[in-house]
Figure 1 (cartoon, rainbow, N blue to C red):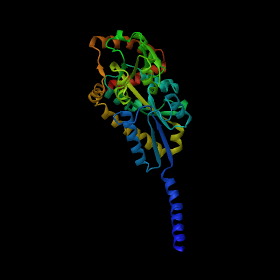
Figure 2: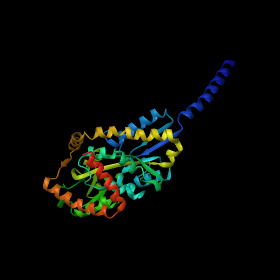
Figure 3: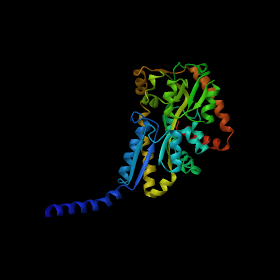
Figure 4: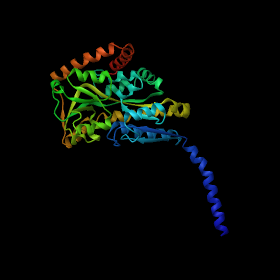
Length: 337
């Protein structure tokens, strides 16, 4: 009996002593929300996994990064609001939805800036572009954690879209309620509908929409070929994805840990670049699911670019701040072409 009491006392003391060390090891929780499914075939989720590993290793476990894909923390509008309020530390979205926090995000919706996904990624990595992006979201209490390209933009539809005329009359989900996304669609005769990613599949099923813009990685991840088999590449269009982080969170964890967070966000971009080489694999996966991949002919692609490009130029020219930001992006894109 006496030995049991001694053993109990030792175990209790050990637990008491260990508790402070456990608490010290994990000082901060960083929740990251995203609408995409948990598959590392998707470059955004692969980024999340790499970021989690890098931050936890470099911080010695002081930051516990928690990943919440598939809208586990709520649909995009709620998740973005959560970052602004500080209830969620960071959240991913197609870039257009961040315009609700700061209209300067809208410039990243401009088509025609890039010729390839790789050029887009290199542009976002230029120091002058990173410096510009760091200013976005200040008034809303957020800042960009990362901005990446998820591949060339595509439109998924039940009826094939092979020509510019095929857009006419179609209700098309767009990635946000911003002019640079929606006015070009109107110019080719479509009716844009701003809709969070999590609502796209049921909307296609119920024919609430006829088509939706997205990326090959996302439509494969959500197995959308089950409801709409045609996917058409959109000339000059690239799916820009970003994550914003709460500025108060960065201030709370202190400059040392905040630097680790921002550096590992950049380091994880390498996995996105690696995924951009998987175009053939993404197309094969789509076709293996019963889908069809369509590329417009040269003449139709030129018509699409001419029609949408003039709309983009007019919108940009009508906003001095957007024009200034667009010029920085354009110069950086030209330098890395």
